[in-house]
Length: 212
Image 1 (cartoon, rainbow, N blue to C red):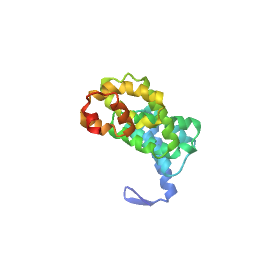
Image 2: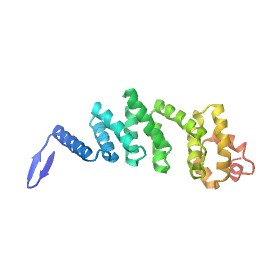
Image 3: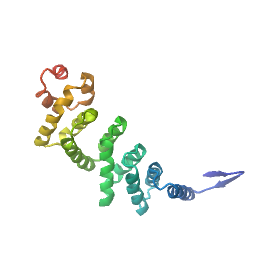
Image 4: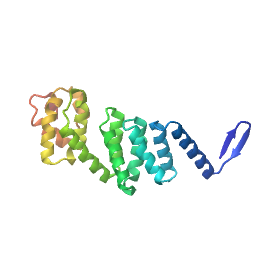
């Protein structure tokens, strides 16, 4: 590996290049300690080189602390977290669960759907985050602004819920489903069991008539 320095070219080994990269990351974080994207990129770099030490754990938690809803933080930490969840200490597991949960309830469609896809790669993590999501839906006031998000979440979480939890979810979903255009419901509700249950409670809804 070669590195240009003015008019000279230095040949660096892989280890030397990794150490130089880590030095630059540490210097950048020292200068801007609350810059979440840089910290998250450093976490991802250490993940790529297989360095899972105390610094890795500290940076993971710090990135989440300073940028809990930052898109770069959610992306990098989600990718790393899904891969490292089973091998992580308890405090890091809790941080990973928070990252994936924050991604799942993001108002950005891309972040939300990417989090769901990543959760599909780890069944244990998916179950933990799904239980958090169900409680979030049940306890939420289903504000008008977020109703599409809630419907999408219900569609994704339906099969993880108990019968009692499903009943709570349906009672909140009915007004939200009635106000959505049919094409929106088609896009959001792809769980056949959920559609059947919901349509039992929706009278005269065009979406349900097309499902029969």
